Image (cartoon, rainbow, N blue to C red; front, side):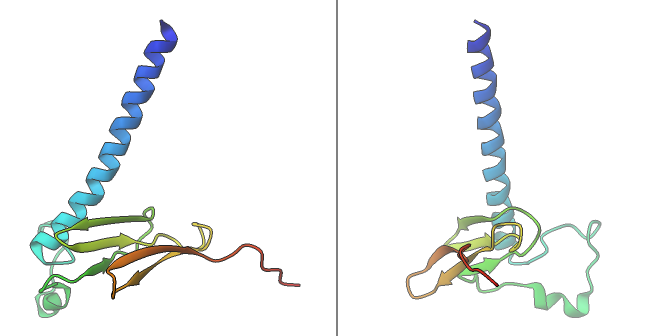
Length: 118
């Protein structure tokens, strides 16, 4: 009985964690693309320097938006626009993502580990 309840708790925890993790990535992509701006937050959070605000606008919607931050690697799609974060190069086993515009595809790549520098 105890093992069964423990399995249920673990399943619910994993389901909620995965659901929230995917939800946040999708909502971030949706906010950027729907507002056509790279900083979709209120003025109280991030003040705007209006002279250069036009540089952060994304209109028309591009095929690919690369968000380079310290968050984990992810790829999501909203409104025919890919939003990717390649993650940190050194912490992800020297992995990166490449975009092929001809076929509108994102490929995961990684440098080989078998290089000897001696």
